[in-house]
Length: 232
Ligand SMILES: NC(=O)c1ccc[n+]([C@@H]2O[C@H](COP(=O)([O-])OP(=O)(O)OC[C@H]3O[C@@H](n4cnc5c(N)ncnc54)[C@H](OP(=O)(O)O)[C@@H]3O)[C@@H](O)[C@H]2O)c1
Image 1 (spheres, rainbow, N blue to C red):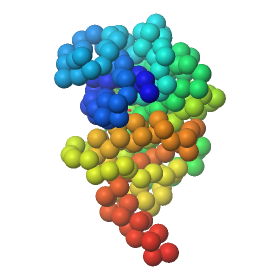
Image 2 (cartoon, rainbow, N blue to C red; image 1 turned 120 degrees about the vertical axis):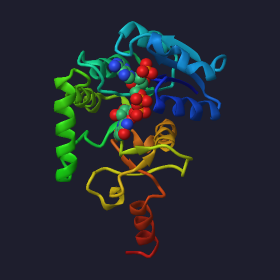
Image 3 (cartoon, rainbow, N blue to C red; image 1 turned 45 degrees about the vertical axis):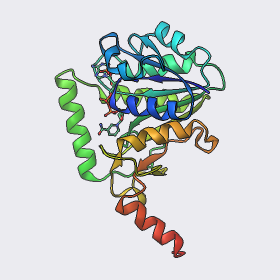
Image 4 (cartoon, rainbow, N blue to C red; image 1 turned 90 degrees about the vertical axis):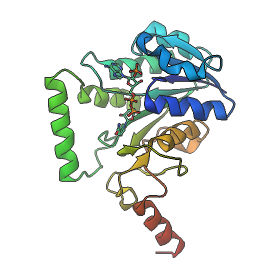
């Protein structure tokens, strides 16, 4: 399998490169010119395409011949970086390729996610402050995902909980809706977020799904596993 990782130089991107190489995949990484040095540890093992990830020519070159594209969707900046990146991938990836997009729980696919008041408050405040200082545009990440949801490609939008560093605990568990008790712990190891993204490449059950994930060893995931095994 040949995969392209868009945003390979970031934290999530690094983990995805490692998981993909561990599986023996051929890897093409896309990152901004100034960040190429961050991929030095993979020198000689991956191909790096430099440039802005919302540049259609950059993405066209990077995804050529790829069976899967893993996209780190970030809201940084106020120049439609997220939606431009998603659109470029949707338009340039080969028909039939698996497309994986990362985002957070704030993305709501079908309007049926029920958020806590504190989650909604924090998202609103972050969005407002980030736009005021022109650091990030959460609405553009929402727009990016809206375009993905409307596309008839083989996409999966993986919605991450709060993240932490640490050793892998295994493949995260997921649900279609945020208020599912299985997600209550709201924490996932970043290495396992990346694992879920890479594993989803070969999981057709996740095509056109927007799984919200949580660590498989968190209290809420373990409580769910106990309830299932005791037939509750
Ligand atoms: N962090 C969290 O707590 C959290 C929670 C839930 C979901 N998520 C999701 O997880 C994914 C990535 O998370 P992460 O924490 O691993 O991110 P990260 O390491 O900060 O990576 C962010 C990516 O954004 C790029 N980037 C940074 N600043 C930029 C700018 N001003 N303009 C354009 N690109 C810029 C980075 O590229 P360079 O290497 O070139 O800087 C890198 O590829 C995102 O999809 C996010 O929505 C994160």
